[in-house]
Image (cartoon, rainbow, N blue to C red; front, side, top):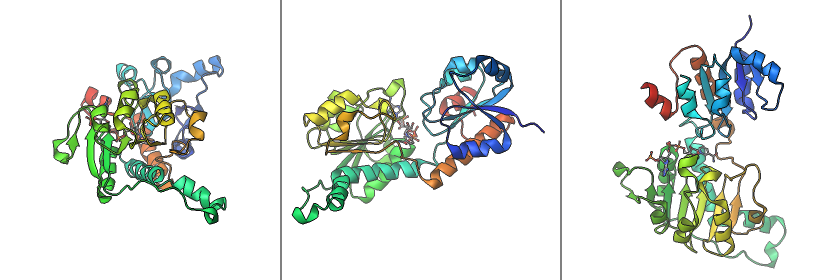
Length: 320
Ligand code: NAP
């Protein structure tokens, strides 16, 4: 029996692909590939598999008349033109919740790494420099003030962890969450002016582009640290480099960048910066859970069953 055809965007995670290949004939999408072969395939494609960093424009969706679902492996879906999908009656799904713990864990790891200079400490020992002297002192984390930009699933999980470090917690988001009991600031600049560690965990996309700009970094100040686990687009990277070079802020820890996988060389050599390669959800356990959920959404969407985790815009559009 022939398996139904689906299309996979470039760089879809291997665990997700593996699950898909058992149930579907999976075709890899190549934007520069054979146009005639794609035209022959396109009318048969009933599912589109994407990743959190995939770019899926409306023009691609328009070429897939039989498409029933776009299933994203990732909670962020800022590269998917969701309104174009809704206009074509195609729901988009993502993988919220299953990665929340890992991303919150990494945010705290980055806070500790940059404040306690863990990368430098490791190098100090490995490079045999310990006998020659001690490292410069770090910055205490317990009891410090944490500000969280974006207070959704992951932002709240970061707050729970920070509370265990006796940190005071404040946040900004589009709307206040009085039930949290934490201080709310309506803007990122106001929040930054009142914290030691500013952790960014909003979605990407146009609405949050450069939400963290020179003004916010100035407000964070020369003793403040920026931690970004959201999307590279949320931080004005040029303004950040300038702020780090001129001592406007004390340091930064970054998991995400404007032009991944390329990281500005200016950041490579800064001693007050910790850099990780967009790995906040990269554990065996979580990537498997994401693959399972993305696959279950694909199966539900292609077989007309209720979707497990449609994105909020689709839930609102169809009251699902
Ligand atoms: P979520 O539950 O939807 O929370 C998003 C939060 O951001 C909400 O509090 C929301 O405010 C706030 N927000 C949205 N737009 C905003 C704006 N324009 N200004 C200020 N705040 C805004 O999402 P989540 O599950 O916590 O995930 C958040 C993001 O983390 C994802 O979208 C993704 O980009 C990123 N992420 C990164 C990694 C990584 O590997 N580094 C992994 C997973 C996720 P309201 O509550 O008022 O709506």
